[in-house]
Image (cartoon, rainbow, N blue to C red; front, side, top):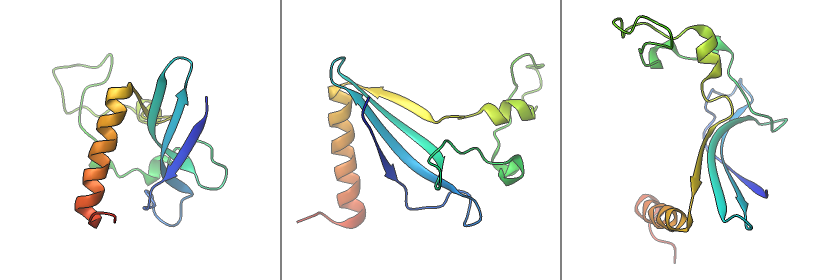
Length: 119
């Protein structure tokens, strides 16, 4: 499956971490399959990057019960092992032709409104 990466302009965990935000696009012509993923990679090796737990801002966690917990206590935070597994390799979306065309239209509109229309 061919893949291409588009690098984001921000450093998601600051200058001291190797993390880089990307959008990865892959496709298969034979099965009419296109996949879009948002990922965080190591800017040096290109491997998936997972923040050390001390880098994660706990104030951004969403309180919720976790599997096997007492669901009557929704304020319970997920255990460390569950946090480490969240978005391990990115968030993937498979798109058909209609979905791709809609994404292109929305991206063009967003670009034009944010940066003015290209000539």
